Length: 232
Figure 1 (spheres, one colour):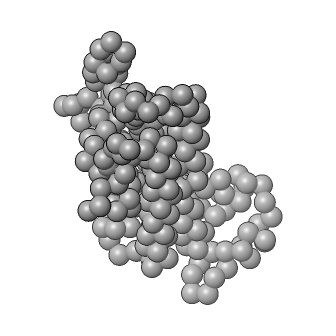
Figure 2 (figure 1 turned 45 degrees about the horizontal axis):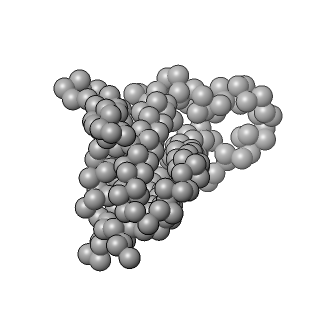
């Protein structure tokens, strides 16, 4: 119920729009039990509830964007097993470029269109630019560590399928952190001075033009830099 309120009101004025009493009414739960849950020493139930709401929002990226991207990636690759298993490196290169284009667009669009992500970004910014509760900072760190670890696992899985090897000077977590940061940085930008999507490139069959997002282009460049093809 608190999250629904934040989706409508945003976080421009802090969490003033989030009240325990209103959430109790919206969620239709017993008032006495709700106050018992949020009764914490030296903190009012209202403040305890708001902090719990913040911690909940900070956990959202790990439970939404990542699973959807992982499932989408596996589904797309499942349709192209013959190309994946080809001994022709150029066939695998072409497939990797197409997967980079489509999965990158999927992941970017998911963030760009997500109200939850915008709430997460606002709360994250507030937490790291002014003193915050240790529990909030711990939740931020744990959430980022989890996402980087899970994306690292996904990227290693995909790299193995394409027979790509991470260059020895890098760690997979560094690649995951770089792609995560680029996507996060591009999502929700307001500037119209550059194109975030609809960038035409001659990457299709026989040089046909295809639409790319700016993130997918950056993602392709990071892959080329961090990985090398196993020629064996």
